[in-house]
Length: 490
Image 1 (cartoon, one colour):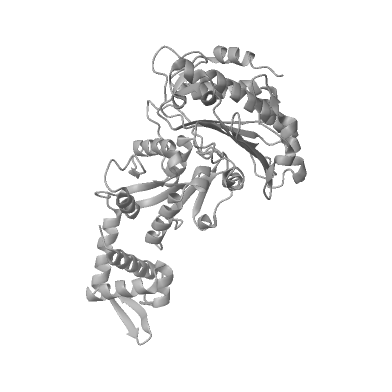
Image 2 (cartoon, one colour; image 1 turned 90 degrees about the horizontal axis):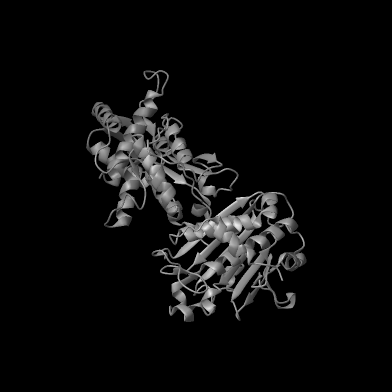
């Protein structure tokens, strides 16, 4: 791999001749570039320009005028032009070795999306580096650094996951941008690109890069098409390709964009739920699809919104509530925490976002005694259906009271479930191994408010089935409906 000074020398040589070729009349024009012009064209710092120029002068590729004030100007030599033509031809030749057309930069929560995009791009003739599939073994940090240096272009999947949960996405872009700065890769002069959800806010780091927005960033076909279109290539799908879309909201408790995530960090994450998170527990987010910080303008109305929407079934309440007098609050949120019976913590924010963390009911039940297994070994399907039905019934009631008419987003997530087996209230589910190795299981629903209000149990059934499939068990809707029928109001 070329050293930094070699790469800088190549860049300066290219800048000199590209500049001169743009003159309308070279014979009447200038045959030299000032130091300021070299700095402006290449984007390199002065120290690196001076070191690279010295190397080029020593090789008789440039002449340089220096005074006590430092480098003043550079001029090309005949040998320099020949060298420029040689390296230009090498640039246009097919890349050899560990070189990639695309470095696909993404959050680890979007690994599946990235892997599918890589598959589609490679099917269409591009070489692609993306983690973790491009790193079978070895020192991954060095392999990423090498790939960033060898990649022709860097594409960032700027999903909500990347914005709110990934440090490496921005670090890798910064490394690539610093290394490639000043090089023109495409006709527009961009060397880094990003794809982001339509309407999402973007960090200032991305303002001067070329962005492509889409309302379907979780669709690998859409992402691959955008990248190929930049190269004027059509997307051809493999014969065995099956369309799919991935959820690109946060992989953790908070679903949605970075503003919702940061807001909730100051509520539940402010310490209300640390004791609950050490055991098997549910994480729930219910919110409008768009962020409005003061959607509920009256802070004092927050507790009442939850109280009026609370669901009270014969077997459970959701959320658990005591009294406003015992509620905790922050600048724009209010919530409660319970450490008896079934531990639970929740917060409601002025943006309309509701966040809850609740211990698994079955971990506190008599099921473990009947099966002879430890509480960390079981996942009670009937309790799960009942809980999810409570959640979606509550979400429907809350949706009716929140200002606005935008869609609602509901994320349910079961945490600390690795190694658990699916069970009923009397025994383990029969018919094979119904366990999971995943540490957490989640499902996200985005729906118009009217649909949620009219069909909360349908959405609860859908979420339950999606979770049960991760335990290698698909009982069908009828079984879920039968369990829901036993869940009645009190």
